[in-house]
Length: 287
Image 1 (cartoon, helix red, strand yellow):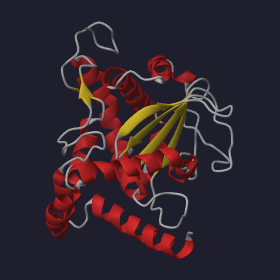
Image 2 (cartoon, rainbow, N blue to C red; image 1 turned 45 degrees about the vertical axis):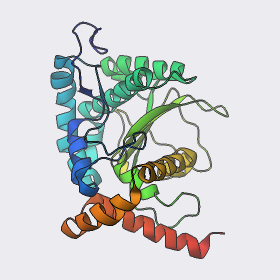
Image 3 (cartoon, helix red, strand yellow; image 1 turned 90 degrees about the horizontal axis):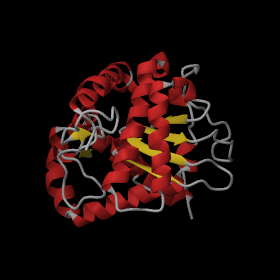
Image 4 (cartoon, rainbow, N blue to C red; image 1 turned 60 degrees about the vertical axis):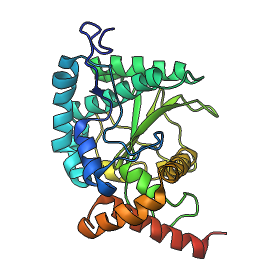
C-alpha cells in the first residue's frame, strides 16, 4: 500500500481526514469535550482517520496548508478577508476534498456513487498541482455559518449541524446540474462541483472561490443551506438518531447539564440556543 497523494511512500496508520486543529476545536466546543459522530454508536474521541497519507504528505505538505488556513482563516472565521483567496487556503480546501473522497471510497460500504467520489479524488489531486483548474473544471462554493432562527424550510438542529459537524460525500447530478461533493466542517460548508453551478431559486447567484476571486466570503452563498436542505435535514435527523442510540437522556441531562454550567460559551450551547429560537419561531409561523 502506498500514500494516496504522492504514490511513493507507505502511508501512516492514522492520517487525518479532518485536520487535527479542527478536531481540537470540536472537542473544546462540544458537550463534555467529546465528538458525537452520527455514524458511530458511541462518543468519539477523534474524527475520521485512515491509512491514506504518508508521513511527509500528512505532516509536511498538508500540514503547511493547514497551519496557514488555521491562522489566517479558521481562527478568525468571520473576519478572514482576503486570506480566503490565498493559494494556501485554496490548496487546503482541495486537500480536504481529496481526503474525504479517499475516505468515502475506502471506508464506506461499496455504493453506486463511488464513481463520483473517484472523479473528485482525481479532480482535486490534479487541481492541487494546477490551480487554474479551480473555477474552470472544479468549482468551490463556500458557505460560512451564521445563525438561522427564522425559516420554515430547515429542521430544528440545523445550527448545531452547521456549527459542529464533520462529514463529506458525493452528490449525484440532477436536473442538468453537475456532479458535486459536499463537505461539512465546523462553521463551514463546502460544495465542490465538477462544472459551473447554474443559478437556482434558492441560490440565484452562486459564487465560487478561486485565486481570482474578491469579496467577502461570509456573505456568499447564503441560500446554500436551503439549496441543500435535504442533505442538511438528513444530517440533523442522523445526529438525533445517534444521540438517542448512545443514550441522549444521559448525555443531555447529566453530562451536558453539568458541562454547560462550567463552559457556557462552548459553541454547542450557542448552537442549541439558536435552534431553540428557530423552534419557537416555527411554532408561531409554520404550519
